[in-house]
Amino acid sequence: MEMYNKTEFIDKLSTPLKSLGDIEIIETIYKDDEIISLRFIQK
Image (tube, rainbow, N blue to C red):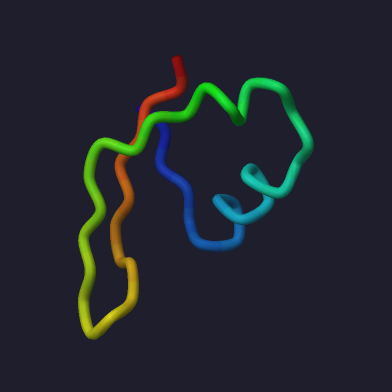
C-alpha cells in the first residue's frame, strides 16, 4: 500500500499513463464537502 499527500496524488493522476484507466476507487471519505481520504486499487 502506498500513501500519497495531496500534491503527490495530483501529480500521479495528471501524468498521462495508460495505467490510469485501470484505477478503481474503493472508498471516498469526505469532511466538510472536501475529500480527506481516497482509497483505490490499480488493476
